[in-house]
Length: 413
Image 1 (cartoon, rainbow, N blue to C red):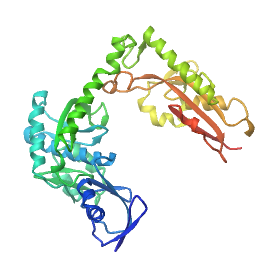
Image 2 (spheres, rainbow, N blue to C red):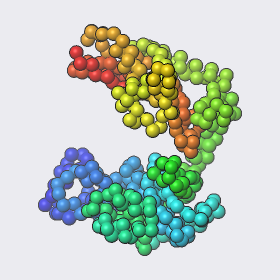
Image 3 (spheres, one colour):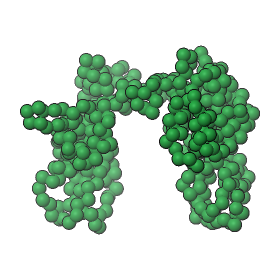
Image 4 (cartoon, helix red, strand yellow):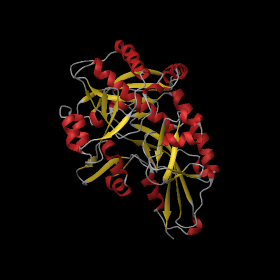
């Protein structure tokens, strides 16, 4: 027998080989009808995965984030199957779930997918789904996997980086795909599906690699859910900040200034100033002092803080000063600058905590294909706040969480 711990803390005993679905049925038939995914000891598993050791089990339904993730990832498998049927010779790469649906990156070769193909693909996905094919995982050796995908350099690259004994394929219908798991019980749960768009995407996000076609989609367990989702998208389009920004003359972009670098027009600047004044009052009330830091800093500052390792690849090229031999970067974050303000003088524990706030502008060299209005830009201003506290006996008040970016620096006294 094995002991299974449920989220409410209760522990139940089951025979070895019991599956998450068996556990769900032991609780209620209603739950079993709605369970579509599970996690055992923190690892995503299938609903029919046999459990052989004691552990903690979480059952997911469509209402859970992880449940939606499994649902959308499973639909990406079905869409990939249909794409292979309708575009023979394509090369599949990766098809993960995302926040609102899923995508699959595909090398279409000389073929091309257009809006005119969407309806045919969607209809075929639903046709396959109605056949209620089960998703089944099977282990394969590294040698076997490499042989299967010998003509697909993308899958081969992925497999080459995996350890033998950890590689699995997922089967459904007459289709299989390299996959580590996380699927719904069968395709029959998919009742509605729509291709949202196609876009270019570099393999592994590297612009030096070949550009693939990314097919975005979304799916639901009810047609009603898809209808409501599409209505919300239409409403969102009417409220799109890029559309309103242009109509209300709030901000603009100029190719001469540079992509992803917004220009605040008079009305936008006035709106921005009102927001800043509102936030400054809130920050002052919470005990924050306003500071101002430069837009650049020595490269070594960001190496020391760790920001260069995190944002170095996404930073603008360094600014060199030949005469002095110095190297500067446009700052990717305000944090190290605020630390240096703290280090400007010695402090007594009686002076702590020290709270600094700034509307600091930072810069990151986002790829042009990722730029999106004001939500993904190359230069933006943060209402950034940092707190310096003692390392021991520290308590953060709820007010500390009011701001968009808070880092804590522990000061050893």
